Length: 197
Image (cartoon, rainbow, N blue to C red; front, side, top):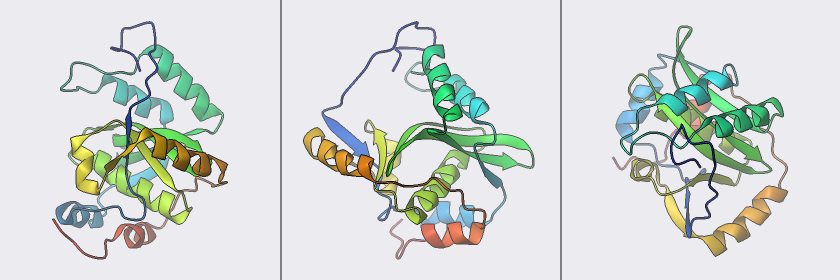
């Protein structure tokens, strides 16, 4: 991570606790799922990766700026061109209004950042991501650091030793990141067995 977008260096971190979002036990808040079901928007995979990461870089953050500097941006664009990075994008007609991106290695997806120009659109992209990971039998969705906004989805912390053991297994799995064109299938994969919120 960079301290801010204007920095010319990148710092490496290894958190003592890792923050994971469950794939099979993902919790969808009732109101969010109801909005998602309305199917107002179009979702695409890797349609405009560079714009997604640029929007993430320029998004206003409460904690003073962004950790994405030009070194990080260019590195992830290169990973995208090598088919290691993916973006899930939300469109209103042809206007990009929300998205997320991350790295895919083995059976693991490492979520990096997300943005919304319209309320809930980044969360809708997260639901779409969960459906893809669930269908393609991924084992880890890594969000790295604690984020109180993701707790509503069942996200939890794991100590680093247990995480590294789990990561080793996940990296050895062979999984394909394949988009789901059928929105009804996405709904069926994200529909919770019971609602708690």
